[in-house]
Length: 75
Image 1 (tube, rainbow, N blue to C red):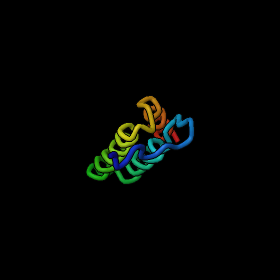
Image 2 (image 1 turned 90 degrees about the vertical axis):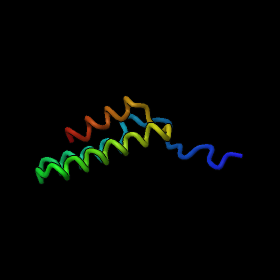
Image 3 (image 1 turned 135 degrees about the vertical axis):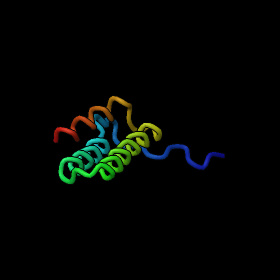
Image 4 (image 1 turned 120 degrees about the vertical axis):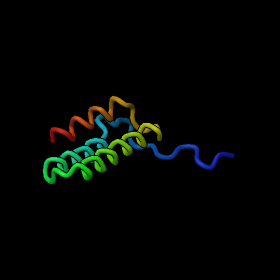
């Protein structure tokens, strides 16, 4: 038997990814505000891990994440 069939299913449409927009928006904000290399690397890694988890769970396509990243970057 399967423990988990479907982890999460949101609405029908998820373009652009709000997870990507929010995490990359915060990461770029921290980068421009604090200018600490270690903090920037940590925040960008966290944002990338969040994006990877969205594809892994099957709730977003890579294009959704790229668009969300651009929204977060230029927000």
